[in-house]
Image (cartoon, rainbow, N blue to C red; front, side, top):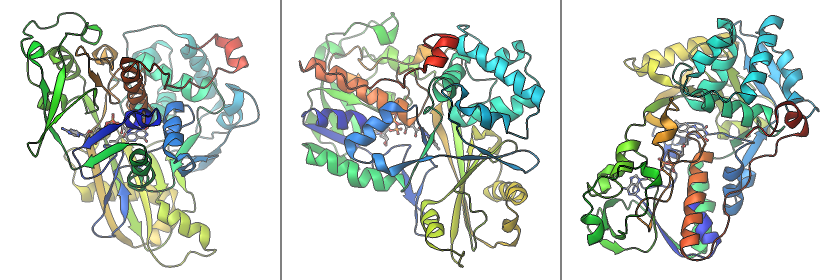
Length: 476
Ligand SMILES: Cc1cc2nc3c(=O)[nH]c(=O)nc-3n(C[C@H](O)[C@H](O)[C@H](O)COP(=O)(O)OP(=O)(O)OC[C@H]3O[C@@H](n4cnc5c(N)ncnc54)[C@H](O)[C@@H]3O)c2cc1C
């Protein structure tokens, strides 16, 4: 969608083919049969540092649909809530007051975190996991559990013993150290489907795009030069020189063949091999990317006969539950009534890196989640559950393992008129909507250049504050 929006924005006619009946891919919604509500496959949030994602939102007219959460609510293991909001100081001190106020960390633990954060800002060490680095920094286990784990498992959907040090550093630098805006969590005010199917589709179609959903690509057609390509490309795949071959068309699942000019394939990495003839110049890229590992994310959707909390969202420092969000319909309802009236009140609990749920029934997961929530939200003890369901995306994101960066290809593929896009391509970002948009913008830039209309589509990161620069330099 980002590549399409960028090209349409620059006056290029395009055709967007999506195999599912709806736009949005992993960031989409589905209709829950019991409640009739459109619910997101999982709550998606963006952060202030997602500059390209917000540029995409501006382009397609949905920027106002993402609203910043000025305050976060952290529940410590003892069940007490701490408010977390920025103060007036420049980054990296904007969150210092909120951080000192967290009651589930003691003074020695806070000093240990501050020391490690400062070191993390400038470390160039590579090839180790974040857990190894934390051990080198002698971070106490309680600090690992109550701070580092809380931030990183949500941000990267992986356990600390599997996260690459530099990937972890990026989260803290972009999110917390560089700029006051970086950490701000922005929450969509509507189910994602309503955004994509409404304003986004209208923007694309109003700008000379043909949008076809439920229209899968069965096979990529290549010209003879490409089909004769037998030598596996031994150089680093993403840097391979164009092979001289071309994509000549796409055969759709309904057997129609459509001729193509420039092509952007924005499939997940594990689906590319299904539609590409084996042995092409893209084969080494497909082989490399297939080594990327995936991590699961689960969401537990719960509906009760009464509100369990007035908070729009909450973060939990220990246990199975990581985040809780009120569903948008209920947020509106809560805002429009003084007193909670009987009805249906929906919540979503997010569990990233949810491997622990494998082999557990939905009923067991729901019971475990409810037991935890009862500690934080006593009204739940009196509430009647109306409906519940667990949704797990098994290949939610690629895992930011040590060495995973080298497996991600550039958008310009070895086949000249073929660009790759998707959160898994080389963007420098983890698997996020920001990463996906960046890949789409980069692919669009390449297409514009090939059409002899070179244009910069990508927008800059948030600037590094003067204070952060003084402390740590440019924070590249
Ligand atoms: C549960 C969950 C929670 C997440 N939470 C967040 C979050 O809070 N914040 C955040 O920034 N990111 C989050 N993410 C990550 C984010 O959703 C992804 O990084 C992003 O959506 C990836 O977009 P993409 O375009 O690269 O790939 P996808 O969204 O996977 O899109 C690929 C598309 O290609 C289509 N397709 C596949 N094969 C074909 C074919 N043969 N022909 C035509 N079309 C085809 C698919 O149907 C799909 O629509 C989350 C992801 C999940 C799963």
